[in-house]
Length: 183
Image (tube, one colour):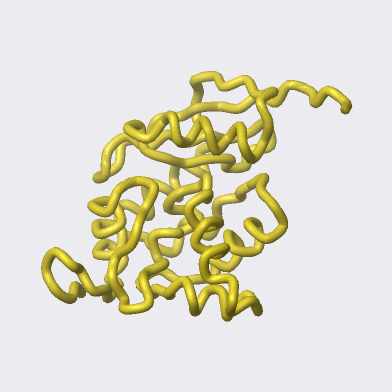
């Protein structure tokens, strides 16, 4: 097995209404990971899983365009996330799921079953759910827009309160077990 060269990644912390976001970018200004400070171990595990262990993570600033798009999204410019260049590892199936997630517009949601059907593998609902859960780029690859078959909130790597907030911020309709339907 050949040794992979050391990849230098930059860790930028950005304040959001949901807490401190950890934004990881590479030397080509592509987003590699985005997670929440209180989920840093999960983010680091996903980085190693998808990109290997030969990574150097240094504090710095994410590209201005990435920071501006994220800040714009949280300020109400919901379409701005589409401008962020991303680079994910993962399997071809995971990457297909993550690409399909980016096609779900802000304010819209989809069930795991509908996402599997859209990918042409309607029987792969659980595999879609696992790929969704392994998404290393929260918010930008909007796994929060995937709901249960009944429209209810289901698991979210950053916690259900964040998922609820993101969906409400986007104006999405969903069944909230804690309080009926939300819109």
